Image 1 (cartoon, rainbow, N blue to C red):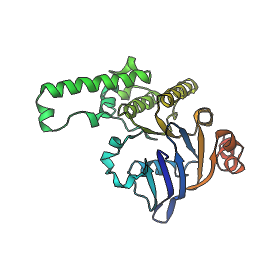
Image 2: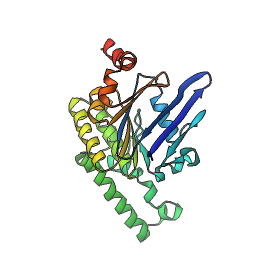
Image 3: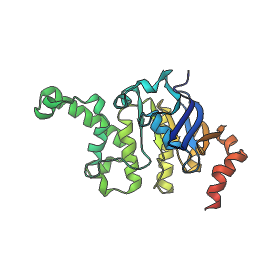
Image 4: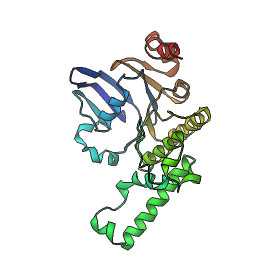
Length: 256
């Protein structure tokens, strides 16, 4: 059984069709890339999977269970985590503080725990800091853990967001343009990080415009254009697909 299954998914915003009967699967342990031109519906699909949007039709299943049954604030508890196309960090907070926010499902919360330093709460906070630092070190940001994220380059902030997603220990990680704003060296480091995540057993659904990164790390690629799936297969197959060359790769090179 697929870890993630998208069945005949459609999303409409008034008269605009953002997704049109899109279907695909992601098996446990895979890295699947979702590519296509701007406006193809990739981020909309992420927002449906994580319960930000409700679909107009179709179903998304996690381990065979409909995602629609999961309250939006409970998505992380079901093993889903994501990064965002546009950064969603607390800019005045440090790297460490931002990553700790991603660990909220295992941190006691409530009025009493927040106002009185009970031994259990102190111990839980210490454990949360340790888990956050482990993820910060994993993405190579240990040296800037105590710095405010606003003082860091955009590419580095993207890695902070990745660490925040990872600290919740997701089974399925959704990465929305993780290489955006990164230089070549940073992109290659990200490629290595994704490979290590895959080796650790995390399943990844990736939206990315960096074709070299996509083709270098993905097991399979699904291509959207104007909200429709136009191709799916191994990276080498997708690269040779005439519809993909026209809809995505061709347009990219035309504007280069």
